[in-house]
Image (cartoon, rainbow, N blue to C red; front, side, top):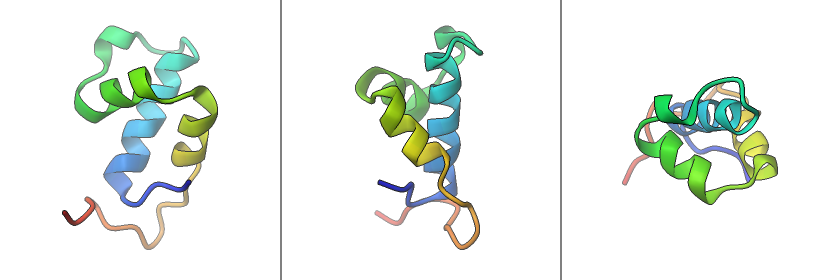
Length: 61
């Protein structure tokens, strides 16, 4: 499942980095912290590898 906004893609990348041990979990905030807790590494990879071209900055609610 691809990310639907640049913000979502960026948050997934931060959460993935923490899952892999490259950054500390304590450095995560907001959406990236929630993603870390609720998603698997494979799911985070799918979100993080989404191409940014054509994505909105934030998703419309």
